Image (tube, rainbow over all chains, first blue to last red):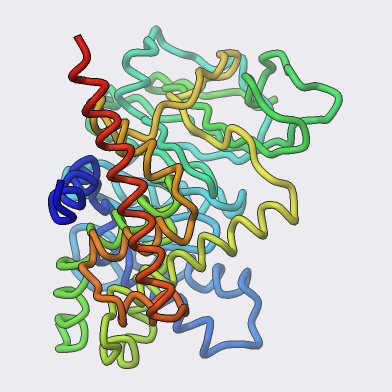
Length: 211
Length: 178
């Protein structure tokens, strides 16, 4: 086998791998880096807050006349609307859930966002099956946080998406934790954080009690 | 759009997939690779006036992504480390999580054999051959991107090709067995 043939064979399994992040999101992320470089005295949190305010103004229209908000890329989380209408969300830090909720709402995702709260066993699941929930939200493997795709079109009319993102560190003394309310379960290694995304759909007019 | 943005957009569209494939082949972690490549392109845009004059800007992106990946691994090791960090289907309160899905890279037995052979290569050999295969970099640019001597690139490439060929031939022989 010639070298060229060998390299073509090695290339083949990667043919389906493509970047999903749109150009606008990359540029927004780059602009964020530029801003941070220009404002060395500000903390990352301050920059995030400033960006969050700018984002809300943008989402509300802000006189720009755009029908869709620009991709939001903050240090804590990123929201990108893909051409297919799917919303890609990456949560890296459990910070500013209200900002994430506003961003999702501006992207026409009727979501209620909480971070790392206890389970809401009293939520009204309204008979929605796991099959429906799987259509609404799909997880993506990620080493750096919680990454998931939301399909707004899959959310039943009038329903709201309750989205609970959390992380927990597996305890050294509990190598095989039992499924517990509000925390991830499954096989985890002690001392290591685990990201979890809990969702449910709230029926029109119904709410999800806290605690 | 500004000419600078147009220029970057053209670069991004032309090179994003091959840059991602290079980093995936080098690291074996698809999602971490996508995060790292996105970050590298963002840095490229933040410094586009400089990066655009680089003799091989796509190699700059890959190098930056690989460095970001290394930084992330070091930070992860120093702080807490990670376990099952989020793969799987939607999880509901009270519902158990299932095992993480595969990375989706390889489907056929041949693909899986190639991926297994790549994983067996030392990291530097994987990087060298990935830069050659996906970015078509010559020895000088590969050496520049990885910060190693051209002679070292040649040696790594020769060893990597020999190992891959041996694995590939072995797999083909196995498939021909009755």
